[in-house]
Structure formats: structure tokens, C-alpha cells
Length: 333
Image (cartoon, rainbow, N blue to C red; front, side, top):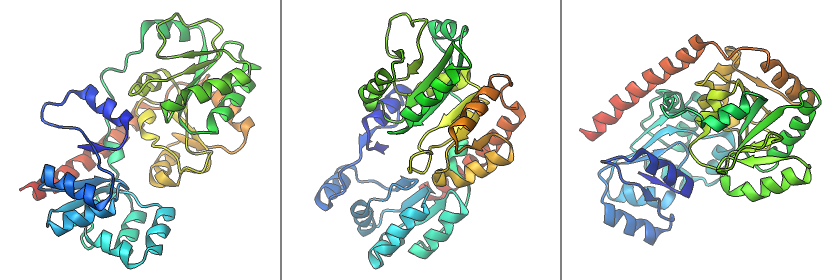
């Protein structure tokens, strides 16, 4: 299994797989791609979501290696870019042996771009499971038991400052308010701390071994692979990448822990997922700061989302996973 980031490699290592090897994906230059394939000699290649690397795909095609685009996700923005490339773009997509799009929008884009074999199974994001190790440290539970708190997850540059402003608004209503911020990229830690200091607020980093100060305003999660702990504790989660023009982050993980999702207007990366969540009143789009505050305030007085709705989402995931596994087994045989 390949990935392109240090953070994903760290998460992978935590699972301690016995039959799966992690390797960083090669830079997609022709000569490097060939060396990578010469060494590993794959019998089949599966690309996930929107990981489309022209040189590697082209070299796999020349070697007649079955190449699958699994849980394919093409946004309107990326479709326009590929279409602009004309025949070159179509040649790359034509190289895929099979594609399994995550939604109907992507299915239509793939057809236009030249993929011959396409089958819509559903979005694999629904198949994620709750982790067993989602129990919070005792000192965190003890600290939060005396607080009212909410969580901002997968935040991007510009969104932490927005969430801090929300925190200041909530502090006028609750002196013991705590805002938990989980940045999308932990390497931005120092930048976020600087913003917190400029706003004259107190903060605590999750990686610290010290006692959590009583006057902590912002609890900054500066570690990888522990978001489930905070979803399990929270009732409401702001999903980042939705105020800035990023396209949003996957909201399904916190929903599995019964959290309600609040988000900004930019969620085109997960339109189909948010549509389902909105129907079941599990998410809400908010544009104004005052509405963010009132929605978070409302969550303090309510219970977590219905377990029946959470189970419904899990059932959808199980069905998608079974069908996906069935399709992939056919290629392995």
C-alpha cells in the first residue's frame, strides 16, 4: 500500500499489519515510475479516490497490468482541468481497466473522459468503522467533566481563526467553554499557537504530559490518529475545509459517534454524503457567525444523534463494502 504523506505512514504503522507493506508513492516522473514498477512488479494496481498519476498509469498500461480506479471521485473543478487537457486526459482515463465511482456525478465525468468499464457501487467512505481504542485519557475526561465544549475538526488555514472568534462569542455565554481544535495538518501547530496567543487565549496541546490547566480555552490536538477520542466525547463537530474554498472534509467519521455536523458552504467534495446527512438532520450548513454560535449553544442542551440513524449509515457501509469486495475478488482470480 502506498501513500504520499508522513502522517498517513504513521497511521498505517499503528495497525501493525502482518501481510501488508507500506511504501511511499514515487514521484510521478517517467524514469522514477519505471524503476518503481520494475522493483515491485505489481499484478494489479488500485488507485483510490482522485489519485490519478499519468506516468505511472501509462507505464502500467504498457505492461498490461489491470488498473482500477476505486471509489473514484471527480469534482466539477477537477473535471474541467482534465477536460482542458483534451486527448491527453482521455488517454489516461482510457487506460483504466475498470472504475468504481463514488457517486453519479463522477460516473458521468468518467464516461466523458473515456473510461470504458464503469460500475457504481457507492461511496467507500460509508464503510469506515468505529475504532475500539476510542477511550479518552482519564485526565482529559476529568478536565472536560467540568466544562462545556465543542470540536472543530480537519481545519484548514484561515478556519482556526474563525473558530477562535466563535469561541470568544461562546465565552460570553459560558465562562467554562473549551474549544477543541483538530487541524487537518498537524505541522501547522506553531502557526495555530501563534494565532491563539495573539487572541490572548490560553491553550493546551494534546501531546503534552502536563496537567491540563483549568483556565484552558483552546485544546489543540497536535497528534495523529486520535480524532475518534474527541468525536466520542462531543455532541457537535464543525468540519473544516468548508469555510475556505477547499471542498470540505469527510463528515462521516464524527457522525458514527453520534455527532451533529455543522459546516460552511464549500462541501462539493462530499455533496452526496451531505445530502444524506441533511435529510436525516445530522448536518447543517451555516453561513453567519451568530448562527454558528446559536447552533453550538443548542447542542449543549440536546442528546447525541439517534443511534438508529447511525446504524443506518453503518448498514449502508456494510453493503457497499461487500459489493466492492466481490468485484475486486473477480480481478484477483
